[in-house]
Length: 279
Image (cartoon, rainbow, N blue to C red):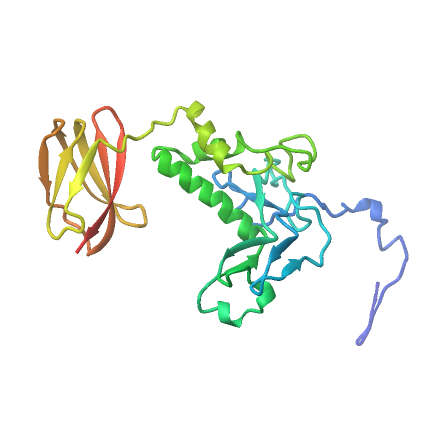
């Protein structure tokens, strides 16, 4: 390479420019760049195609102009592994084309072909749709199994994934992970993980909303109540021993008025979550 005041002249002299074999070719598999998505405690979601058609806002059939197979892996879905050779993504879920609820203030500005029948839902897609699908499955698992850890939830989802003819390669792999997310199977298949279930009949709280105090009635023998704010931060806790059918008055000191969540704990280790409104 030769330099002058106003030009840079490239030469092909192999003595100054090494042959291409001395370089590493681009890696077309490892396409994940976010450190967050590479965490072992994060379920990283790939995208598969969902559908080709839908009835639009004017009751006309909308057909995608892009030719693809519903259920097949989306071309733009990122591949693993991580830099330290761990599996990513762990699971795939439906992305484009999907129908989702539209923001009310945005709906009037959208063309009718972008809105589904009824004009309240919009065409959406990508991993921005696939990831919330898996987040919803995780929320259902936590509702059913409040004691579940991040690893429990990941196991529930990955070990109950759907594998069909469109899920290609040996599973798990760095394109599909463990396959296609199956929320129903994940809920049914969690029992083998030995996650402590909760019993919705271990206690009750009255009144809701409450002002300064509420009455806690034990259906089963209770040992504690924890109160969390909407961010999941513990803001109040109290330990006691209430026999079944007995009552106790709780006067929680809370930081401000608003929504909280009371977690009742039985002496057997069962837990129940009750939404509170402090006003």
